[in-house]
Length: 397
Ligand code: PLP
Ligand code: TYF
Image 1 (cartoon, helix red, strand yellow):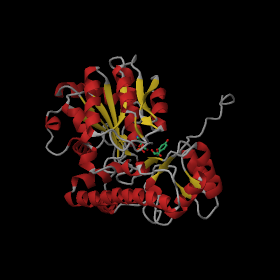
Image 2: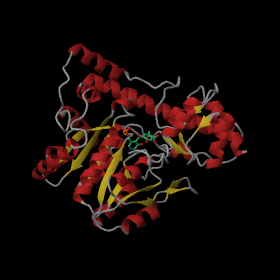
Image 3: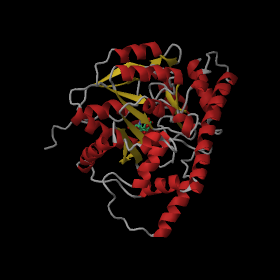
């Protein structure tokens, strides 16, 4: 049966982790995978999470099946994070949410549902995008193309190219956007640019699918939702995948949500019934633990406050690392201007390093980055920063 099965290529980012783990050098640094580490280089367990977990153990809750669409309080809280407290849209009943297996799970059930609904549509993603976007939509049966996004020359956005490309798309093309903290570049459109993008999406009758995996890592929870709210203000029907993996440091619990904005309350009922069918035939219903923890935090005022403080701590530390990296690179005598790192948002920076330079960083200095030049700024700390800056200086010299 399996004789003809070929060896599949490794995931370029997760494969890098395996290589890093096998490396026995003492000073090795992993700037590959998008994970937040604290200043001691440890993966944090947030206090808010710990408290919610203790409460859960204390409650000795039985583990029955959840509803197909997950925990109601979780879904409602996920909606509030997106649209804000007191949102009229939420009051209208046009929004429906299903708890999902991380952001990836949200993208996947969204993709499966869309394939059923728009079998002839194409999907377009940014060039570049998170590696898994293309793979995931192709697996769901779509042809995936790209729209221009990153401009290597300016280390910024190719906005005119992006807008022109979107304008030329046939109606009902599914367009995947990163709502904040673009992965892998760290480059986001400005709010004014988003306003123009939304106009095109609306005029050309495109189908927006917003991926928000780093809410709270850019400028703040509310600020980072502004693009989602902008799309909503334009009365667009859309899909949104939320990931809480990073914001709650709950990577392995698979916490996410798929939110759909429909045209009416009545439509929402029909849409949810079909989405539940997609979920049922995939994994039946989501797991309890991570969802309960997130739901407890989001629905308990004192835990919510604690969480927002811890999230702000992560955001501020990443920003401090951006500033210190740029300074350290100057200290190590680098001529090139790296100030663009300060403008980028979220966990990542497209550093501009070439694949050959990334290879040298890894082989000669034990500093792991993605071959595209993407580095995870959230993995820098006061202990490894100097080594990283010195190593970059050497490969650039
Ligand atoms: N979307 C983007 C842009 C991401 O960077 C990630 C990162 O993992 C995801 C989705 C998937 O998130 P999760 O780990 O919650 O599945
Ligand atoms: O881009 C990253 O590093 C994170 C983690 O298949 C990740 O989003 C990477 C690859 C993958 C799943 C998660």
